[in-house]
Length: 58
Image (cartoon, rainbow, N blue to C red; front, top):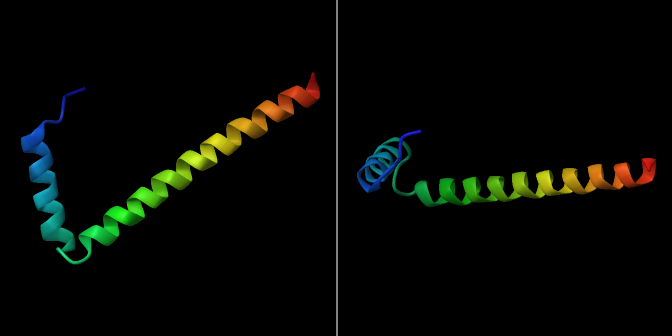
């Protein structure tokens, strides 16, 4: 898998800035962060429920 360096990140940010706009970019970043957090929490909750079900069966 190729490594992403600083020039590639800058290019991605410039493209996002052009597509989304400067005013909506922070809002987009916040919503992406919240979505990632909720996804991780859901995965963690799913693992805990699976562990609990295994304990009940044993």
